[in-house]
Length: 287
Image (cartoon, rainbow, N blue to C red; front, side, top):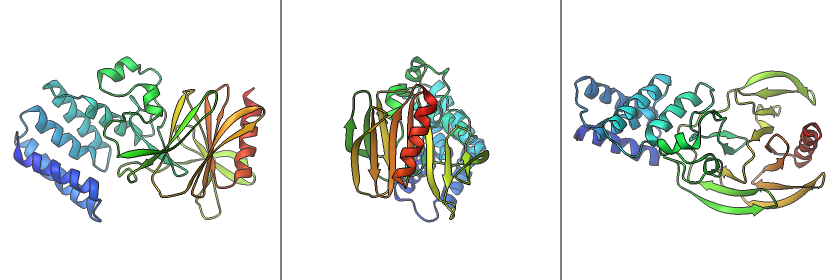
């Protein structure tokens, strides 16, 4: 084992837990040191390549994440288990390009709730198992996510066809991208509706802050509602058009989970009336 790579890896993990103010600079310096070691042939066994891969995984750009993927695949080729480091690296590389994830083991925030972005429907659970990634049902319920932040369930509500677990993360994910918006040509109440590459839509208030958003989740029996900020939780069953929906209130934010013929809509916002109006509009257009 290359002891210097091990040391750099341990420093990386310490910074990931403590999040020092100069973490970005420290990450960059570590990557430069790793490059020197790799160029000199200092990585020779699987664990060396994994240590190097994880340091690049905490990089700043596409080149870093692609390097993390290549290094972790090299480690797998040399016999390293488990294989999920490579899958997570590939998903991060795709995520930061706004492309569907290959496996599904990444999250981004949407109105204060961490969500799994669009996943390539061609990827099967069998392929996920091959790379030690949870099944599609486990992913959306945040069960066994690989390399994820410590968390605990702080509340659960279940109706006839959906269970929502509110998950409190130990901290905000350090390398999760923010929403990357494009302006839509649709106007809602004289406000621009923004949309990202995954089809998630939202409007902002006059200060440019998230005000109301809606996204479609595949039709799964159990969902995670993942938050990182502190707040007071309330869970309620709400009846809309004779359908049982689940309302999550956390701090100032509210999210209504509504099942439709297309899947499960998650509508998040600050104003309950706007959320209900949007839900009714979605339901009316779904049938």
